[in-house]
Image (cartoon, rainbow, N blue to C red; front, side, top):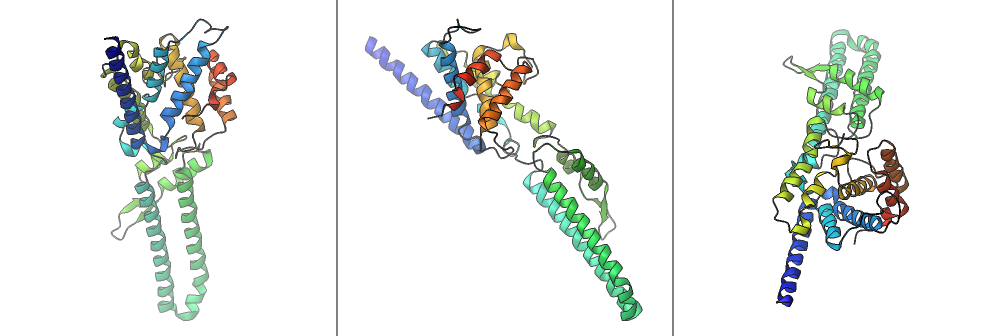
Length: 333
């Protein structure tokens, strides 16, 4: 009977492991740009938990984790982003402020404007030649050419400003002012209809000061945490694994209470979640496969973690262990 129970237990463990791996594959197929993130976060978090378990002094010297608790932490880390399957794909993988089809439409619009200008000035030259002869044409040609080149240069400047502003980097004040100027301009179609250089939606998206998401898109991305919790809560976990939904639920919360989705404070964030948050932030900063930002060097990422500690957003003792025990150097298998 003991052998049968042990065999059944091993089968259940294998089943859970297979389920978790399949779930991670589902996450990464939904968002290939973050491939490997879940595994790396699991490696960092379990490594941090083991380091905390061996502490002989400090705030967490009496904290210890059993084998089952370490497994619980690992599974929660692997599945912490599963809720991304509930986020619309075009929002999930959005790399720039405008969607690709929007930027292409802007480029086509500006090409149309430039062609219209060139057609208009060509007609001016032709009319001058027909009405005033060669001498009259030569008298106005220089002014028409200069005006055409000035306008085309202005269009090129406008379009380059839009392309630059479309990047998710922090937007400076000068491009913001130029975007205001572009948005205020219109051109007339053949039917006399005034068309804006930038429509309101394009203008608002391009004015996003940091990142690539507007407020609505950001809220949708943030909703992945709630989707994760609901998904994990629906699974009949064993008694040893029952805290997985709660651990994963808080990985974007901050000790100061200004995280998401619930805005809970330090007293409500368990140590397992605090460890995962440190790991998640570090990997998000250093990952080189994100289309919407540049990876930062490891030391810079550690400096950012330290700054978050100074702002009381992250657990000081855990960040200290993460750095001093070189958890950040661990690699996913």
